[in-house]
Structures are given as C-alpha cells and as structure tokens.
Length: 195
Image (cartoon, rainbow, N blue to C red; front, side, top):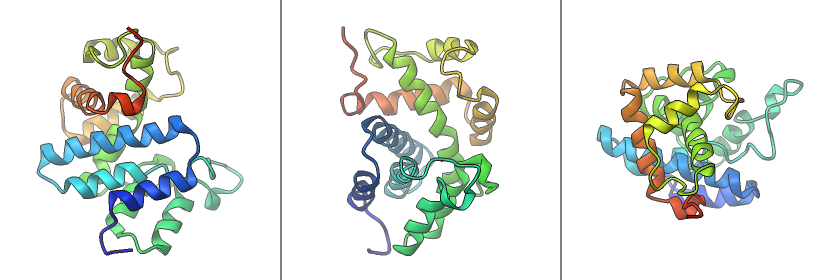
C-alpha cells in the first residue's frame, strides 16, 4: 500500500470483509458525510472520505462481543489496517468512533466521524419510511422522529447529540448537511423512494 490509502483500497477492504449490502450502504453514507464536512472545514477530503468509508469494514465479521473484547469491532479492523500500514490518524478515528473503546476523538476528523456515524443510520431509517425517500427529507422530520423513542430505538439520542455538540455545528445545520451529502448518492444508498 502507498503512504496514503486510496478510495479503491478502502473499497476493496469493504467488499472483501462485508457482504451485507445495507452495511456497505451505511459506509458509503458515512463517506459522503465525511467528504462534505472535510469540504466545509477546509480539510483533506480524500483522507476524511476514506476514513468514513473504512470505519465499519470489520463489523460484519467481528461484531461487538463482551466475551472477546480484543476480537471485536473496531479493534480487529484497526489491527488489520495497522498491519497493512494505514496511517495513525485513520486508525485513531476508527477506534474513537466507538465510544466503548475508551479512545477519545482527539482530532477534528475523529470528532466528525463520531458525529455523522449514527446520524447517517438514523437519516436512512427516516428516508426508508417515506414514499419519496430522501429526496425531500427535511431536518424537521428527522427531529420529529428523534423525539419518538420507539423509532430506531437502538440509537442512543443523548450520545448522538453529545457527538453533534462536540462538532460545534448547530443541530439543524448538521442534520441538513448529512441529508444533503446522502442525497447526493441516494441511488447508491437505495433511498430514492418509491414515489
């Protein structure tokens, strides 16, 4: 591998380790949101995009397991990336995106990854229950669904909001930024809607 991993290298790992199309789509959504935030903050779009794309590549094979914490996501994935010579800034962000690792996000990229990760999943859930998909989804609708604790109940709203706060972007702006990024690849995400 080169000093800088490419999108093709990241995509190769995603396809090698992840068969589930919905999990792949989640990684594409996170990549799109990370690229959008890199542009917004004047950061390295390729670096941020590759980090977003690769962050969950190991999840399908090594889901979280309290009985084997050293053989779970994202620790196993980070070990694979380290063996392949991936840069520390990507390894740090991938470890820090999961709060249970105890690794705090120390870079703007790591903070952004944590801030967009769960939200992309939530936006996907919101879009999937709409006949028009993501095409006309508004932050107001997402916020309404956030108040419904039964909708996408596994998502910890307080943790998600804390990650957004750390990013330093107004919540409505943040939701809109993620929607816009995902809307740009809606066909790839399967969120075009049925209408």
